[in-house]
Length: 132
Image (cartoon, rainbow, N blue to C red; front, side):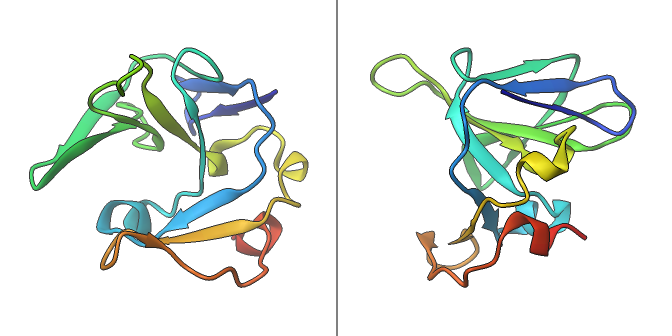
């Protein structure tokens, strides 16, 4: 289990699975926020507690980005609609993890959300190498 907290502590998250990688996306939202994502299912292994504000891009309404209304940290995203099984995919901002050493070994997966919307080749970097 991993836990994370926004800067001011108003929003917390818990991830009840063991992530095998983290994703760095270059879309206009993720790149500006500087996030690294871990994925799961809302209410199963992804749990967010505390008030958040929601941002949905007008031209791409499939994702809802959630931020702390006090400090502004990007906490998570979730699909705007559940899948065919009624489950909602979600992602947590790994940069908010309470124990960075616990995830330092995870490989980074690159995703081109800006142009091709496809996974990109691995460059063998780990979270510890992208932790500025």
